[in-house]
Length: 230
Image 1 (cartoon, helix red, strand yellow):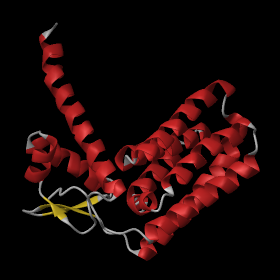
Image 2 (image 1 turned 90 degrees about the horizontal axis):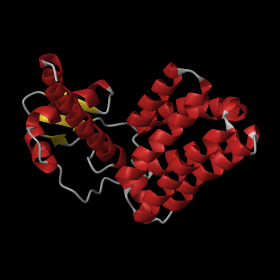
Image 3 (image 1 turned 180 degrees about the vertical axis):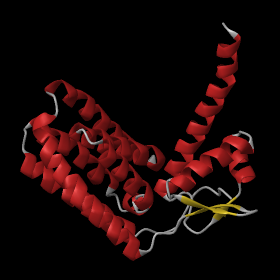
């Protein structure tokens, strides 16, 4: 191993750690485990993850750039609050983008890719059955972005990723307590089957209903959290 390669290894390990912490924080924000408006300190979060405060601060700055949290000088980070009006605007954008994109890509998804999409949808269902909201939210995000990626427009996929991050599906805990998480998860598998049937109209209608359902869940979500992240 050359000196340059040896020097790159610690840098890469640091990047991997930061990415892992960032993914965990995103999932906590998405599920509502980290509450909007509450300030969380980097040292407290670092203790929670069993790491130093540096990768936590770096990861939180990634989330600041994504609009998921705000930096609070000398205190830490606060999960961005989304007003009902903001949420309506974001969901309206998702409704403009995702159903239309799904309608367009249905004929273009290769037959040999359907098994991968089914596996991704099944993972969402498995997380729902286990009540694992953090894993559910991340699997949901990956499924939506993977499907939209068949449109060949990276800017569109990035835009939807940011919209997902901002809306955060804060109603997941409420949906789970009402026993509706499994039904929401099953819609992903139904969507794959509609793609397999090349039924673009039905796929578009299901995507629209799926997004509208999550808007209703977001509106009724509460701020209960099982973990004290502060």
